[in-house]
Length: 165
Image 1 (cartoon, rainbow, N blue to C red):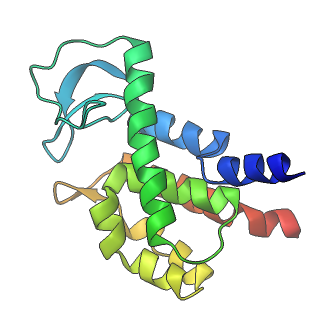
Image 2: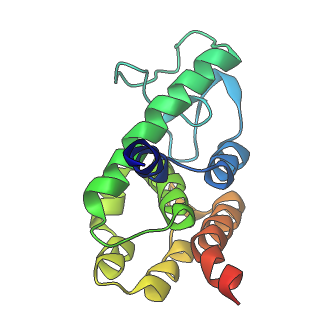
């Protein structure tokens, strides 16, 4: 029984398939480095750092899908750890995964400073969910891809509510 509970606890704090699908869909794939709309060098599935934490540069060598998956896993672990560290209220797997996707995209510093985090830590789940659409800018511009991503993340975050109806 204890090993089942330990497995559940370990799994609960990992992005689920729905959250991973959001990340992959909206980050897209690139084997070669490119500058994202904010001008940050990026590769793979939106990775801005190597597995050892060094920033991706525009002259970074081309990577394989397997290397991209490794970079993604490293970035997601960082985002998962940030959500675990910064949120002090219970989360279900969809809430956790939506927040992990969000944090992977905006960074843990931005998530830490966000009104979303503050509302959530006051147990204002619905109010926190209303913050997703506000994070639709990059480089000062509203991006259609970020609008769609935030809709998907918010829907995942709230999906447990519709499951109960």
